[in-house]
Image (tube, rainbow, N blue to C red):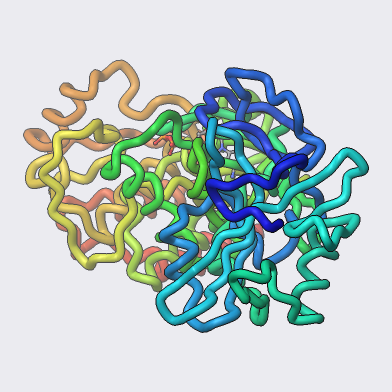
Length: 423
Ligand SMILES: Nc1ncnc2c1ncn2[C@@H]1O[C@H](COP(=O)(O)OP(=O)(O)OP(=O)(O)O)[C@@H](O)[C@H]1O
């Protein structure tokens, strides 16, 4: 007899793939990226590659979300769900009638066969689904549930099972950032995974995922690309291209003194290229700084990252008293909390200073409060390091014009910056 949710088949085990209530990240063969508090005793029915890569496998989505995806009779998805007693099982959800969706647990037996109804067993879950789909055999005689159309995951939807954590890369505001392997139909690729720790509040979750929403609009060689987000299990994850070289500020601190000037000029030009692209997309980044530029590939290509604060409104008034990067802020932001594309241009000037200062902290010797006072009250500007190319120094000063409209657009200074980098 077929077992629907709440009714596991007798004499068989449901397919198990780990347990919920997980806390710590770990690398496992089924790609589950969380470490169970209680060891999983039986994972022989765990997620296999044929399922992981299937576009109709939706991971641990709630029943109501699955039901919303199934519009017509015969529409189906494969998903994970929490069975009685906290065990995670695989199940097929299928619309049987206009107002009814049924959920069938996939069982496995000692010989590693998979089945819904013991009358028909297959050697893999995908074979089992293919059988029911191609023969139109009902999943159970009583329900008359037939598999007709597999409903795909939404674009950007990534399952946790597809992520294999390798090691920690850094610490983000919401949680750790990891190097990981992402398995998709394209194969295996190294990625960076930003995680959100704990059971986040709705507000924190939205904030975290806003970065993913912003990033997915952009496609440029000097902007970090997002591959998708995994949102149905904890920790939430944003999956993006990995920049093995890490943050530019760390690189500058370590290598700045011995770096050829040509490379520094290139860093400026590449950051400007990414920023000019964002400017064209009307994206206010709000956190342009060397710590938020990552380096990629063996040539250390600069990529702008960290869109956690970014927005696509033309001008933004942000009254929140959250931590702000004071030393990168323009006078109008410090005074009136106004952000615009031109406040990004100011921050770009500070980034140029950081590059020629080998990753030093801007406004050396000044506290954040002193910096704010000097900029707002005395119109103070930093002196560029002695060996900064003269033209670069001039451009940085233009970026620090007190009047936002008098600062150049990044697109306007880009040709000169590129010329300098090519010299
Ligand atoms: N795509 C990536 N490739 C390689 N390393 C990365 C990537 N993204 C982030 N990191 C590493 O993780 C660190 C933290 O990331 P990031 O600054 O984006 O997090 P965050 O949550 O925005 O933190 P904050 O807001 O405090 O800057 C980075 O400094 C970098 O070392």
